[in-house]
Image 1 (cartoon, helix red, strand yellow):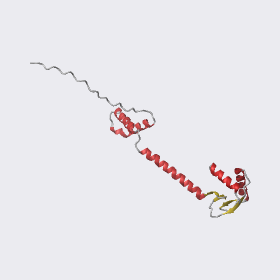
Image 2 (image 1 turned 60 degrees about the horizontal axis):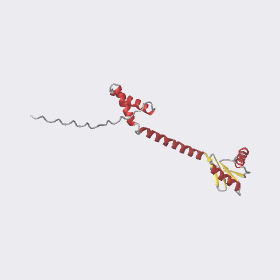
Image 3 (image 1 turned 30 degrees about the vertical axis):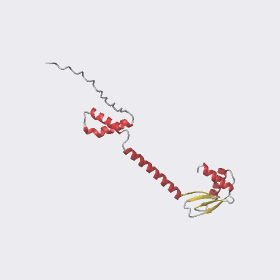
Image 4 (image 1 turned 60 degrees about the vertical axis):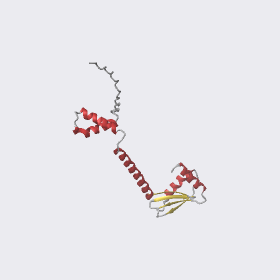
Length: 168
């Protein structure tokens, strides 16, 4: 429970005209009732009045209601939150896997390094897959930094002076 929700519950417990109601799936024995009473009193620094009630419809759950506020826990709620959490993890994993499969901005560097390896091995095309894997590993791990080759500048050559035609 975050701070704002806790403050709201505390205010509701302290200003309620009726005792708070704790409902559980089965009738709580005296010891758990006393533990709940003590926890509420200590948490909210007040003498909180509580009534306890069995509610079989709360399958393996418990809820506290007071003055328009309610907090509850049940196996069903827990399983729903676990399902939601697992679903979010699976979506995140799918995003990471999809991103890993898409070409990255490193692809040109990897291709250049793979070609360098190909040339170093005497242009042996049988090891293309291994060359690519090695190049990708090197680039991604930062073992080698491939700088793009500067573009060759073509400068116009000065025109040769025209030779005078010989007279015959």
